[in-house]
Length: 175
Image 1 (tube, rainbow, N blue to C red):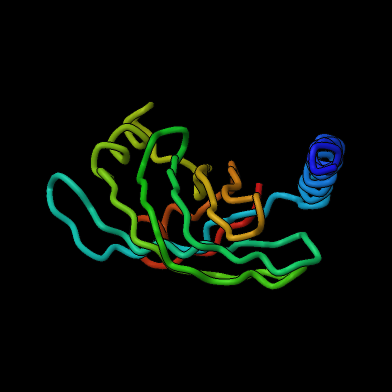
Image 2 (cartoon, one colour):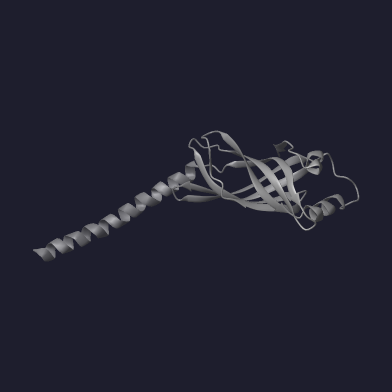
């Protein structure tokens, strides 16, 4: 009798494992299909510290959450380009929440070799660029949502050259 009971349990486990796996995978697929990637945009840049070799800047970013659930951000890694030239990069472990169907702004420190990047940008044709420069922000946003632990992003926009050169916050719009 115990042999039949053991075989019955094995049969149940063999039948239950694929069903549980299908439910788990179906739930994960549904979660991924419903979530849209957040949008990031550059709000401003402020110079904090500068040496000949590197500059430390406080960057203000806006995260827009197009989803109908709160986006718990654990941190992010980011790289910036200005006019197609690598400009700065940084990481932040600062946690914050982006409300459902809302937005949040946050500050993070980045490290740049701005002198080299600006010489390349301004020295391309010997002319000062237009009043605004294209920028690109790329990286990964870390979350604490179920199996969705990392969300890549790659956004573009424009920033005022005057605000960039003064090292003050400058509003930037989405491209």
